[in-house]
Image (cartoon, rainbow, N blue to C red; front, top):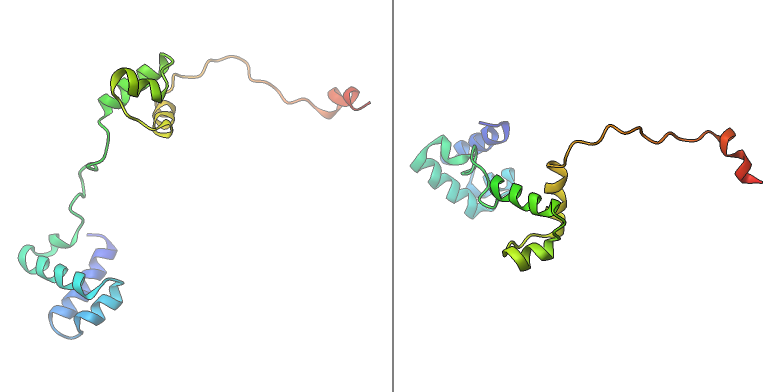
Length: 128
């Protein structure tokens, strides 16, 4: 349990024991009184675990599967744009997502020599 969840549990415990009102608990937690009532009901029914986020330890429901990402990046490497992926393969993907995925799975860089910066002395002839 995180520190935030422990603090939330303390405040809800105070509200449950009626040392503070649900409105006061809501103000302390930065929540609405209605949400505090919902949390108290969950806590009574399911215990301390009811206060943690339901998706903890699991991937997001909106996450794109890795196999799909790899297939899209492979097609992208074949010079396909995001528009072509939609037209030819029925894959609807934004340009930005495609760019980010391609960046993650890019091929290793070549070992060619990097360009060196020129000193002022070597380019002084250009200032004439």
